[in-house]
Image (cartoon, rainbow, N blue to C red; front, side, top):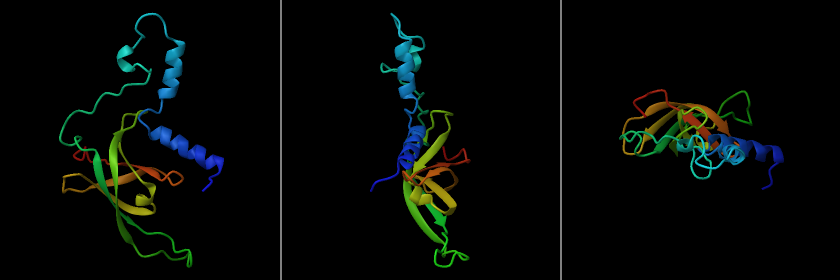
Length: 156
């Protein structure tokens, strides 16, 4: 399939925004311009390629396994009869936890089709039986990616 250029750029922009190395290209360029003899300024914050090094997540049982299961209840519009909705359906998917680089917030990255038209989303960590309510923060159907946030601190 061929996608329009605008869709590809939108998909790339979202993927870069969600990537833990989203600023690596800019940091590499600025590090190359400001390189001098001796160790670079702020050497503890960048690796040998000039990429930002994030602080590792604190090692605890809650962040040891990043894989989560996503449970969603969704109700889409009936295209044959636009004045009514289709019956509610339940579906499951998977995702993983990650820390956003631009604000340091912990989010869950999952596929957009798992939470498309979702009215209620819950997530469960691997090996845990308790489900936590999640909210869809961002969704991009062009690249089939979505981020979820969980306000309950017990989840993290």
